[in-house]
Each structure stands twice: as C-alpha cells, then as structure tokens.
Image 1 (tube, rainbow, N blue to C red):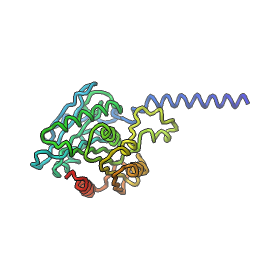
Image 2 (cartoon, helix red, strand yellow):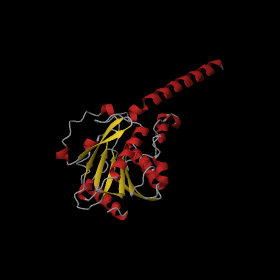
Image 3 (tube, one colour):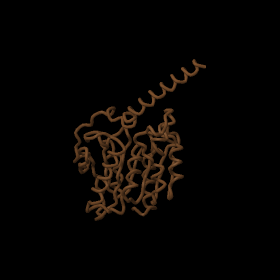
Image 4 (cartoon, rainbow, N blue to C red):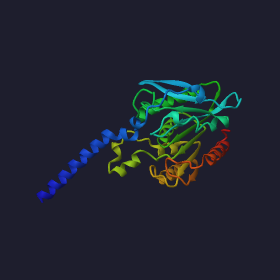
Length: 270
C-alpha cells in the first residue's frame, strides 16, 4: 500500500512539474515569433501601402493601410489579423483583391512581431487592435459603419476580441479555433492554465452581425470541428468548407474571392 502511495505521489509531482512548464512556455508555442525570419526593410511605394504606427502603452506597433482603388468618398474597410507564424509583410499582394473590390485593407502587426515593440499576449493584442480600429474608423475616407473584421487562425482570436469591444459590419473567420483553452485537453492540462484563452466561441455567440466561417475539412492544426462549432454558435452565420488543411486554405484563391465578395454583398457591405 505504501508503495502505491509513493508511486501516486511521484506521478502527481511529475504532472505538477509538467503543468508548471506548460504554463511557462505556452506563449512561445502560441506566438512563435522568434522562429520567423527577420523581414527586410519594406518598400512601401512598391507595396502600395501607407505605413502607420500605433502608439500602444508598451511601444509602437506597425500597421499598413492599402487604400481601395474605387473613387468612393467613404469606402468600407477590412481589418486583417494574420496567423501566429506570419507577418503583415506576407499579405499585401495576397489580399490586394480587397482594394480592387473597393474595400480598404488594414494589416495590423502583433506586438513583438516584425518591427513592432512589446510582447504578444491577448491583452497586448487586444490593445493593439482596438487602437487600429479607432484609427481606421476616424479616417475621412473610411465608412465606420462598414468595417469588416477578418482573422486567420490565431487572427480569429484577435478579431473576435475586437468584435466584443467595437461595432463592425461583419466578421470573417478562416481556419479559426473555438478557443485556445479548448486545446488544453490535447496537452493533458487543465484549461485554467491557459494564459491567453481567446474565447472565440463566446464572442461569436454575442455577435449580432453576419459571420462567415471558412475552414478546411482536413485541417491538421485547428480541427474542422472548431469551424463547425463557431458556425453553430453564430446568430447569423454562414460556413464555407474547402477541401484543404490549415496552411493551404483556401486551396483556390479565385473561388475564395468569389465567396467573400458574395458574402459581403449579402451583408450589405458592398
């Protein structure tokens, strides 16, 4: 009996140490910024973007605005949040189609990523994206009633958090998760250890506007069930499923743009 007690006590101690380590290193896993090669100095003119700097409490965070090509005096605009292994530098060309649709595009960097100050966390990202929203909504060439929030993967957490704090015309979630806490079971850890929970499911439940959920049916990083859960929770939701994994979603960009444009027209944004 004493031997069994010792074994159980040892197992509990090992598990406790594991949980402590998991608590300490989780931000390096969620925000692998040190694994991203340092970006070269941007050529803003060639990219066609307007550089902006957000003055956060912890330092300056970079953002780029790509204006629409239309002559509309007050145009709709998208705030885009990228995945955890990416930078805003990767997206002007890929998302340039928004400009051709007459929609401005604001690419917002995460704290501690690229050329931006600070350290990434839900709190610092929330502050950054709120500042970005307020800057965008105050522009004379942007219609504040037609701001769309678009998040990919981790970016879904950033825009869902923002959706709880500021009004928007629509939300687009691509390859997004229900919450970071939902992944705790994968690591055999209690959910309360998660420092940056990003509860997207709760945000979607409270969101009154249209929500487009895009997910690959073979997503190996964020399981397809997460997309299904977000869609089911949305009051006014639409789901588009692509034959794709995580990093190859969407598999067909031409089809993606048709789907997004159709959604925005149905939402009254275009």
